[in-house]
Length: 425
Image 1 (tube, rainbow, N blue to C red):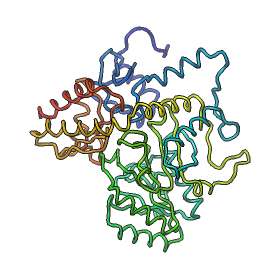
Image 2: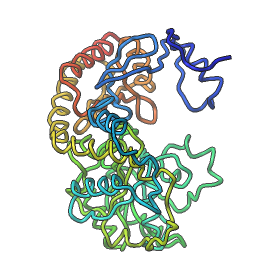
Image 3: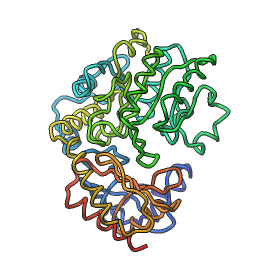
Image 4: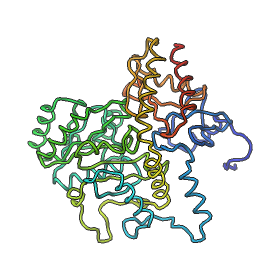
């Protein structure tokens, strides 16, 4: 049997059937009705295998700040194909770096607060968090961490204890050092955090640091109070520990800023998603005194990977970050996001199911009073040509994270479809 694709049209259902034969069944969601398999995309529009068009209000979990097949991506692709000199197509970043890896790190550094001077690249957001956690352990010689309810920091085994969802952790609980992690309510009183620090310091693990998302995306768009975050910075400094911001989702424009670290004296910040423009690259940046806890490399780095700092991804990422900065997309996100939330509040005010419309920048959540309702809406919006995702532990929040440069015409057309669907209930 020939398993290659052909020029003839294959239905979405047929593609998913083929996928079910070769892929682990846990990997990909396969809806029972109106299935979808992406075939092509441009900007904030996607077309499936049957030619149907969709508005994308997710931007690849926020990883496409410039939309699908951005100018940055096309420039790099075309440039590599037309280059008279063969381009570098390997990473080897821990032994022999490429020019693009260096320029990428320099570009990120130039956009960050002055105290964040040293960085390390990886592939995924979860890996950037792992680098931050390892850095904190090396710096403090301790292994105890404070995290927060509903926090999501990735699913790699090393950082899985720090992610809140029990359904992700429980199958692997015998591998996880749960006793060195204390989970607290987001925005809890400072005295509660202080008590947790004392508990960790009373154990053999000690207190290494605090890991927090300025806005919890997967939890249903829950925002940490700025003054509260400042209090965390004070506590970690007092105890010679490390404060880590997980800005994999929020960084570089999503919530109307490049980083929340511009307001708070944080030690380490984790970036991913947006900085790759759709390609797998991430980074952890921190103050030099903390990052210098890592030893000088002698050619065998303590933390590396075959594709860390891949030149193609670094090039696309660098141009993406430059576009976010030059086009003022963080400020646009801040202003447009507030306008969208107000429009949604007005349009959805008559719905008995809507509890709240919240968020920061173009990270928007619509909360419903019915568990699973947002997940149901995802399936109902799909055949209407709108791609959205549920969030929150009970699937009761609909998350909207469109491309930062989405046209207002496309955005509001998609939102009108979505609002009509909600009101119809």
